[in-house]
Amino acid sequence: MHNDNDVNPLKLVTKLGLNRRQFFAATTGMAAAVTMTGAAAKAAPGANGILIPAPRRGIILYTVRDAVSRDPLASPYASGFKEVLTELSSIGYRQIEFAGFRQHANAEGGADLNTVAGATLLRTWLDDLGLEAEGNHGSIPSTITDATIAQFDTACEIANILGMGHIGTGSDPTGSAYVADWEAAAARWNFFGERAAAHGLKLYTHNHDIAYSFLLDSGPLDASGRPTRSSGIRRLEYFLANTDPKYVFLEMDIYWAHVAQYKHKSYTAPDGSVVTSIFDPAGVVEAQTMRFPLFHAKDGKVDTSQANGYVMAPFGQGDIDYSTFLRRVGAKGAHNPMWEMDTAPGGTAAPNQSLELSKVSYDAMAALRG
Image (cartoon, rainbow, N blue to C red; front, side, top):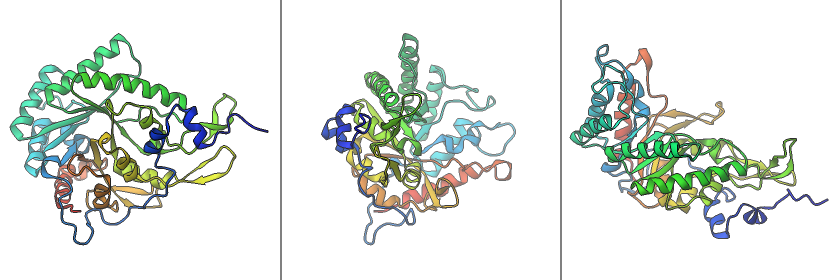
């Protein structure tokens, strides 16, 4: 018996409101991928071009959150925004992505710099140190009301004081597996993306592996009336196809995209068959490269004993082939790679480890050729 919920991928183009150009530009998951492994800093023989120009070598401060948040009166190491930014500048970093604007209360400027006065102080330090703020992992309102619009406008004002080109969030537009929720998220992001553009900013979302898993958009319905199978379209592919490229941008975390390549390899089709579909991280960027102004240049070692298939590592010490990735995505020199390592802080055993690894990783970024 025919089931209206059993939709093949081409029929789904119409069902989801995509035209064929949008669908094939955004959907790379159905194509076979080139598996990218090998030492991160190795370039192809004879390749000698600088892949990350000096002005675009960046870091997200989440990597050194322990240093930003520690008490300068109780530590001999760099503590608080001013001292940490000074050290990062001396290493060579020129771009900064914030992960909020809080520091230890004893650091210069006080605990909370998410104010006009605080942002003005931060901007003074950035300018003095030759640093450029690129973005912030804040939050995007979950509803559109007069109050949330005002809240977003204030965040944009802070971003402009800091001289940012982008404003964003560290989480996915929605954690749902269902089309209706991604459709609502796309509409909300289109609205706030246009609002950000009016402030001269690009709105971006930072994604983890789950965003590259498959939508549940077809097949038999569950007891709540929700689809249980997939047409093979990945969540973020749908989001890309249903948001305005003038207003909505993405920051691919290259580590988590490779985790997705490892984890999200197949889906259950409407007819119940299991279909293999390997994700190609560079391919999804290559299809719309200017929609990815920012990257998280996070490295990882292959470890299939872990659920994610990788463990985080300093840049250049993992198995993600950054040389090939950056050469494939095109627009050389147009992207802003921010080094991140969630596990960089060393705790009481190695209190300065995150800043030490910042130097190791900067040197590897500077040495990357392709």
